[in-house]
View 1 (cartoon, rainbow, N blue to C red):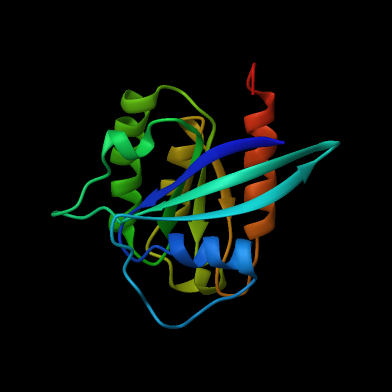
View 2 (view 1 turned 60 degrees about the vertical axis):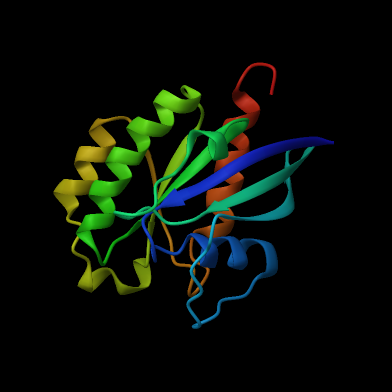
Length: 168
């Protein structure tokens, strides 16, 4: 069986842990628990005739005191940048993070998950912000850890992208 490391990155409180919990265990908890360091989960995804075990590294959120370390990213086949649509600052952090991750591990598949789509009418991230990311060539998906919207699709699309990389 194929096994691939995938890092979940973004600001504090964007929903990285909740997205992983929704994907791996089909649950959502209202209790907010800050990830300290890294939390690792696994789930098998089937794409065509291939089974891929995704080893999901849920990295502590980025803020003024905590930054993603290159050592945490090493060996990643892909990553998910999570943006909280309710907080514009998480969009800015994602742009910075993407540059740093690319420098640390090179170009690997990644998706930007615009989380909290269930609250779209309250978003601070604007349509023009989103178009700017598309113009950079980013793969964007909308979803909600709360109701599960887009979560399965995110990891299926990511797994498909990983399998398209030569020698995957």
